[in-house]
Image (cartoon, rainbow, N blue to C red; front, side):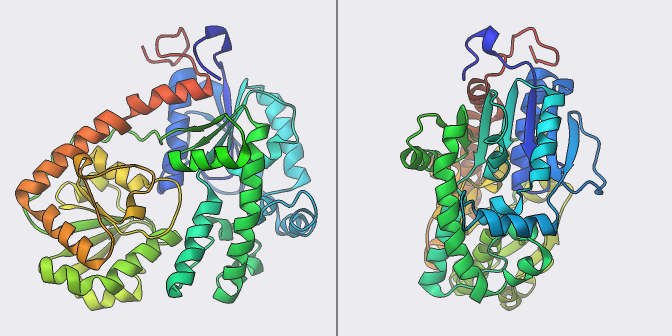
Length: 439
């Protein structure tokens, strides 16, 4: 699927998703929103449709694209799908079964026929499972990241140090029937559940690319892994399309105020913050006595109990409307993650603002960055403490800030990522004669 031939370029598109696309308050919504912005820019908003498998009774903001809600499966439908699709064929993953319903299939078929778009983008395997049962069109699976790898890192972490992960299934647990979601919170349940889901998800991931013209992941290493597993040559990497932040000058004054960015209802975020607060305090305060940490994101009001020992050095801000105002005066972003998959949107948000990053290897997963990109990466309390001390130094902070801005412009800015989207999705080029297309 390329845009080299004007006759092959898409004229309209439909995105099928089970994730609320607005407001863009966490990583998944940011990624999905970037895709929708690009489709609207290339095709015109009136030619971009979203079919959302979600709750029909939720108030939603107005959108430039056309949004239609297909009611998600009810608890009875979820339980039936779990009983008939996980153990017996098609041996689907639990997250796929939680979203499966013959009624939803029928309504998606009817909606897609009405929309009649010549490009279908299916967001993750949970919705992509429906595409296999529908008439074939030009279709792309926006797989996002390999969930089987995320579950594998969680299981390795639990085996390594008996780590307790709150809500390890994350957003997936929220779509389970009420009693099942509550059961999944117990370690005696979620560990074997993670093992089962990792195995089932890996199986589904390997089979999925054969049903699509292209399969897209945000992490290049995971794209290579899925190519190996599936044997399909049409697995590609597309970095998220983030909006260019408004122009704002940084004003770091040498203080050691760092920012942790990310919702604490996401297991990798909470685990990483808990580990940092619980194991790094002595090392950090020895090298950076005036260290402060601002915790920004959904659920940050409920800090891990390990924060108590830090006193007022750790300050939860919750959700903030003006992220630029928080980041502009900070010494850097702290990303001490230990588990997960995909890439870290928080790091891209920092680089786009010229904010230095101090991180563990998992904290910059999938981005292949280092000091020349404004990122200092180390593992363990002593290493992170030394990097925090280095990053807060005025001269080094300015150098890292310039490197971060340069890396954003060179590798991650919207105009750089957009060219790959046009190629993979078969979209008209920027000078094509299309309504809504920038010239």
